[in-house]
View 1 (cartoon, rainbow, N blue to C red):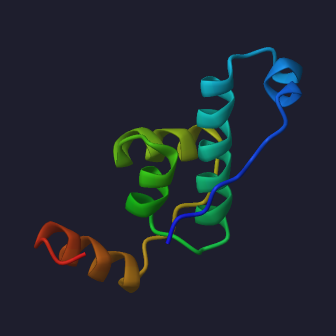
View 2 (view 1 turned 180 degrees about the vertical axis):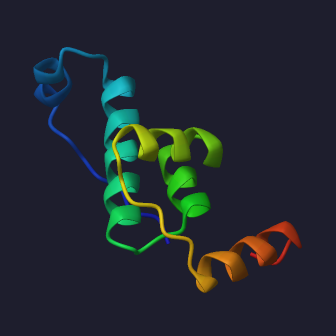
Length: 85
């Protein structure tokens, strides 16, 4: 499934940035919010943000977002490492 979010052109101007940078920022904020809500593991949230899991983890630490590591996270990581997403 793919979801498209359309943002008015003036949004990037209000952020004083280019549209591509605004899009990247929105992806990051969505990923952080979904991770914080417990909806996604780090690797999936990092994918939404378009960055590596290490970069995403660093951002979570900078923002002081709690990073519990559950059994489900471990199972996901093991499956991912084995090529079974």
